[in-house]
Figure (tube, rainbow, N blue to C red):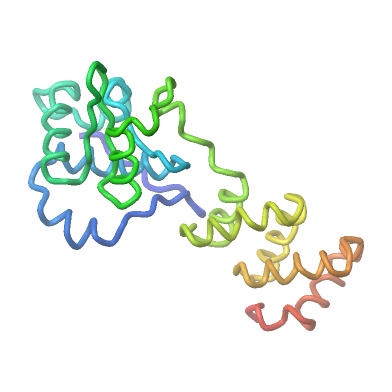
Length: 229
């Protein structure tokens, strides 16, 4: 058995899972392949953006990471995959759409957004992109990684706040504000947002002050309530 080297030191990127996965879905899954596939597609969906989040059958069948995870003693991942996928659809975790005349099939998460996208595809209200789903996965904005590595776990609500902040403030400002928050052990968005708003009102030139002056100003001034002493 191959050992696990352990999770790396410091902040790591997290994949959010719905609470209902643990309370409703996990207790009912009795097949290891189905469990592995379910966790894997949840991770894949979490990397996508846009109204239509789906995975194509042709893409999944060629996904080396998935097939490697599914293999078991005496059976390859390619052999385990069809049964695991069929079980996930039968259980209702995934929704499958196969259009007439198409060789491929598309899978959606059984959620309100997934249902709407699946029904729209079935009614031919939209068409899947030519590129495979794996290629459509977007690289998350650097601001997301910056937040996770320095502040905390990224939630959907926090992601929307960060997107809005990126539209309102220069990226360099956000990076500097996060650095200041880390220096003062004030790892909260409330603290970072206060810095950004002050720069917006008073001008970025205040950053020309020395680090000692900045630390004193921030720890004794209007950011003091957000700093752990």
